[in-house]
Image: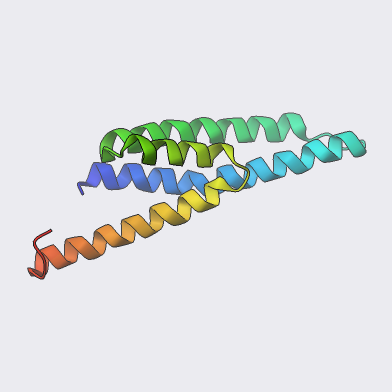
Length: 114
């Protein structure tokens, strides 16, 4: 994996969890808006909107650089629209990155021909 691909995946990982948190907070704010006088929806909506746009941009870049299959690419996009999907995306991307580091070290040491 080259440095640009690793960077694209890292950016996607870094925005996944905050995007998921902002989505959950936005849902709570929506409920509070309907049940109380508290209205933070405009602010949280803007924050979540920016994070979601960043997620989509970073997702597209990662998909382009990693050459994921259609199934994998759509899987990560669907996770972005689920309330807790960003947490699962971050965990899965982290695991994949760690596996890639292990494979690269094994190739470097001549343990495997992968």
